[in-house]
Image (cartoon, rainbow, N blue to C red; front, side, top):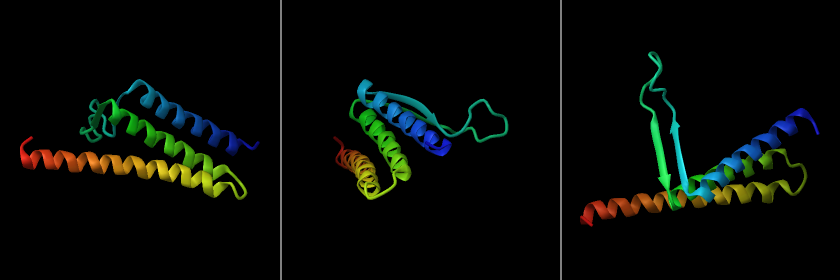
Length: 112
């Protein structure tokens, strides 16, 4: 294996490991962007604190990134099915997020 392949394998294991951790524990808490302690960088981070199915969806997103990363290193005809497995999982997580957003808007409009 070349050093690039080792890097891709480590990245895949890291992304899938983080995703599995979020999915199995049912809790994901992290900060996206921003640095609240920096005097020069933007100070508006996005705080993520998800539980249950929302954490599992976030975990599935990280797993899909790991699978897509793995597909970039696969050579030969097996590359396409590996890519689509990752892309399918990513699309499923996007559909879950869209469904949750629609349900929240409906609940807001109907007052339930």
